[in-house]
Amino acid sequence: MEVSEARMKKTVLAKAVPAAALLGLVLWGGLPLLRHRHFDIPVVKGPGVTAVLRLSEFSPGLKGTSGDTNVYVLQGRDPGGKALIMGDTHANEPEGMLAAVIFIENAIVEKGTLYVIPFFNNSASRNTRPGDGYPLYFDVATDWGRRRFRFGNRDASPLDQWPDPDVYIHYPDRQLLSYIDVRNTNRTWPGRVDGPLMERVTFGAMELMRREKIDVAVDIHGAETMFPVTNCIVAPDSSVKIATLASLTVKAMEGFENHVEMSPSGFRGLSHREIGDHGPSLPFLLEAPIPFLDQPTGPKTTRFLLDGKDPFLLSLSKKKKLFVPYGEDGWPLEKRVGQHTSVTLEIFRQFSKKTAARPIAVRGVPRYAEVVKSGVGRFLADPAKAAPGGVVMN
Image (cartoon, rainbow, N blue to C red):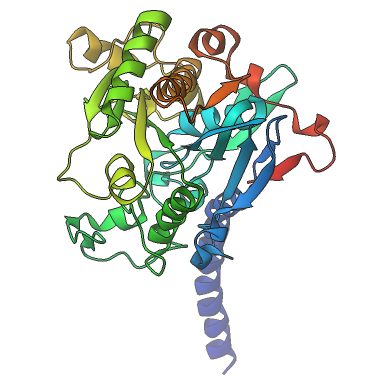
């Protein structure tokens, strides 16, 4: 009997040790992801911010979910047109989010009203892609220290929207898309009030545009250097004239490459297609090169995300395999963000020239040369020095 009990204890111990080790590994790997998911980013309400709304005010099905997100309103002194800026549609393209934050923390709207959603796919911004070695955070150097941001994923977290279908059937056109597109907020436009969570996100934005009669909608992205649709403005027929004038102007006056790509009418779910087809707004989707997203690169480090330098891409550039110029200086964050602020401001200017009765006039936001010279952090506010109630967590 004593021998049998001793064997039983050994058996239990033999099973308990690996089980405990497995639990330890799960906790070791899972706790950083849990902290990342619950890490909130402070955004300082700049001098032009007049209100902060929630997207659930336009799509009630978002309330209490991770799909809900903040909408910053900057109402001008004088009436005019209305514009919407969206960043983090794809949360692994941070230049869009940073450009949106710069508008929130710096812009003064003199004519018209500006709506800014810096974390459009909030769930994706709290997701990651560990199989690709994505960093969970990145820091931007500022005049007062470092400001930390989450680095997210292209698609919403399966913790928030699951299961994925075998095939995503786009609403309302019923085009068959990849199963993963159901969690991609640049495939779920125009959305629906009772659809999957990401459809409720895009429905909320469409409702905002319809109710507030938004004139111009700018969706800011980044794209691979090996992808032909980069360094550009994507626009449908309704927006292409303004897009062309904006592109030609920044190229001539500010010295960086930019061109216009036509929105394909046969590919559904995209912001630059559905916004104009289902609402009053003129849509524009901006792309700047982000080498980090290319596949044949070195490790996906935070440094690479910020400076855009990679020896493999440099070699491919010499073989003319890239769709953008690529040299020893890479494609640093300040160039990508600066392009987006300049192109967005130029779209507003060209719209105002075309539609004089509804001008959108914004000052205080740096353009390309200023961002490249001073760095992105120069235009990020210090949350510790904000007035009481002046910081909003995102």
